[in-house]
Image 1 (cartoon, rainbow, N blue to C red):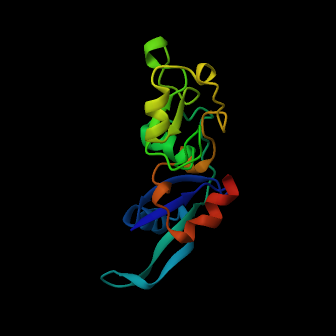
Image 2 (cartoon, rainbow, N blue to C red; image 1 turned 120 degrees about the vertical axis):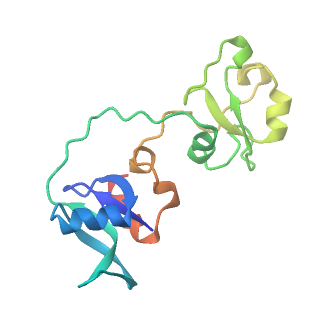
Length: 165
């Protein structure tokens, strides 16, 4: 089981194991906001609540620079698994400016793409094909991208992740 850790200002910080979360709570560095009902943790002398979401008692300063690494899975997720050209279900990614012409692996140059559009486009640009992009590719923002582990979110986390988006 995983636990969402919130900063003192309710900003999502990290996803940790429930054991690490319980240690933070026991050392009074965090308090439990949401708990998993009917699944307590049995200690030798006491029964503890299993934390689903905890909040730190003191604010932790986070550097503003949190680079989101470019991955195939990330591009597909950013674009909602929809082709950037036709809107059908996407299973591949495409370089807007092809690699053969100096296109780089950046958030701004990659879009989700269906297999058909990817094969038809080949090593040409959308302008050469008279195609338009359905979206402007950009670096994704929000806590869902900067906090690792939230893609497999517990339903109890949704209100806290939505606050930071």
